Image (cartoon, helix red, strand yellow):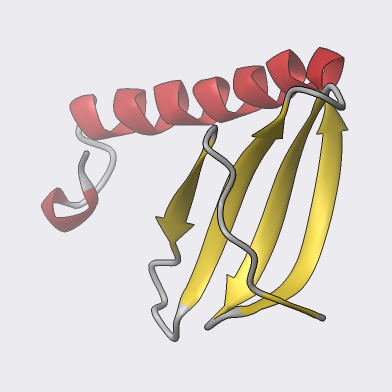
Length: 85
């Protein structure tokens, strides 16, 4: 595990719904043609995954498909009101 480094200019941090100082960092490394997804707890990187720029659209498609499905379930009334989007 490595100590925290500043987030590159191109990136974002997403906090885990479970709390506990867990976060997902997304950082673009244009000079290398990579996007890095890293899992953090407090100021320590617990793991990372590198995607080439060419692999990113497939990840976006999977996320978009799941979001569309969740929205359809919420609008269709299949989910309890407390979990609707």
